[in-house]
Length: 224
Image (spheres, rainbow, N blue to C red):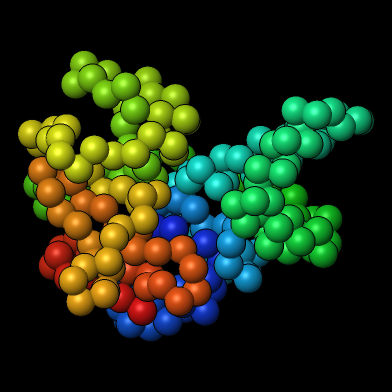
């Protein structure tokens, strides 16, 4: 089976609960469409687990994108400036302290291995389930044009620009995105939204908010 999750944000315990909930096996595939790190308590533990699984396929989210920009700047500069300090402050405000602290206590080799893991993340995935094509992207398709190839989109257009659920982007593909936190339903439960061949799956980022997964073969939704 093929599953998709998003915006785990360091909630390693809920991630493990979800793997148990879906009965995730070695012959299954799991795509995690961005924002594995920050906010939650255990982003490093989550990355470590994911990096050791050959059947888990993450893509880049805006939190990884910002963290990598900061890490690269820090490596290539011997002094801080106001622009860099502002970038770090922005990261910390959106929960980057848990990732920064977690990476800081690692041995150098493991820290570099996890950073390389993040640096290798693709910006999107295209997969087929039977004849159905899915495009997996963290946020959306900024400056969308049907004449543009996916490789022509910038990282910012894919990890920051929200998907417009009122627009049907493709006749032959379903887009699955995270990033935008879904609103509560009337019963108070946040649930996956499907509209115009778009599927939005980020049910929340805090510990008390649900984590969800969908199975592409069955369409079944899972919440923990």
